[in-house]
Picture 1 (cartoon, helix red, strand yellow):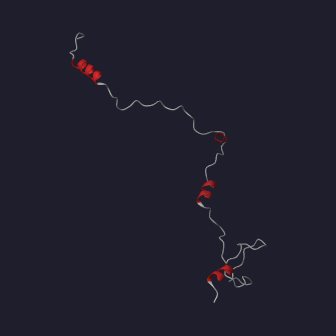
Picture 2: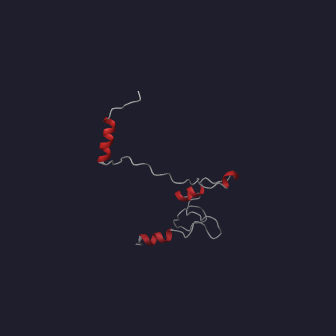
Picture 3: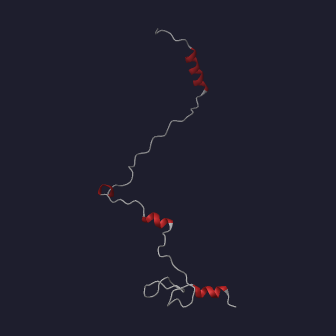
Length: 107
């Protein structure tokens, strides 16, 4: 009894086309095939994901767009002020005295 690996070795053709450039005929077709089981190759194979995206990506074709470069580089923004500021106790006491002092004069 032949092993499964040995049977599969004869079942897989070397390529999907013959040396003349035509597709290999299937075993069921009249006049060819030689009685071996063949693997049919797809006549319209699909591209894999990355190859498809590279082929169908948007390309710059308009004359006004071809010479256009990337986004404008602006200088970095200044740092934001801190949300919280620590005030020494002496300044807190002085500020509290100013708030409590009665307003004089300008009425």
